[in-house]
Picture 1 (tube, rainbow, N blue to C red):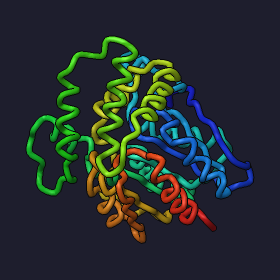
Picture 2: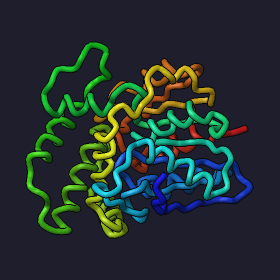
Picture 3: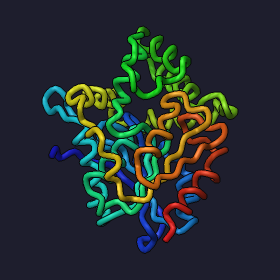
Picture 4: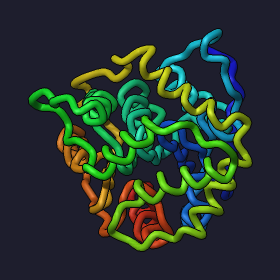
Length: 292
């Protein structure tokens, strides 16, 4: 296991039930909004968020010299738990973080008190390949997961064909455009708040382009996800999807079908981000799910 430094921070009392917040691919831990985290701690939880390797303030890797796979990113979950003295925790996961949470719940069930996945895909569903086929205009094999929304495909096709941004402002403008897309069309988009967030993400990153290593890690081991194992999840599971999810529409219902006893929750207006309008509803659901 590579010795990569992982940045993390925790909130709340040591004696409160711990929630480990696992963000998605290429995403910093601060994408768990401060206000949302505050609602969890006000509800009597000890909340921990962290930057994945090659994001934010965590260590970066020379991928050519020290390649890694998503197995290593998954094993970082255990490293963060160990560093905070957690034998087990409630896992609350977003997007590809949900794949990590599902994998951990299958692999080490004794470490998962409960599982919450938001805007994620079912473990073993090959979601990354579905997105890549959609971007390349290739047909999806029968039984594939639902494709992302047309506006998602159009945005990333344009991005793939565009030159890299010339300076800080151009890069942040691009990051805001991506946030607007992922936000979806169900709620108003606060561009000023988005600029403050993306400036914070830009300025706290040790090496912003290093996030692309997460894509290289996926290509290094495309079969990272075990298939046909979600029936083994023992942890009480809450699966959440926004009604305006652009990246993984309909994937949450498939997760809920495959995990015994899982509950599905649809949040009106929400896309693939966590805007202020949904914090109260999300936090209340997670506090209820992690109670007792």
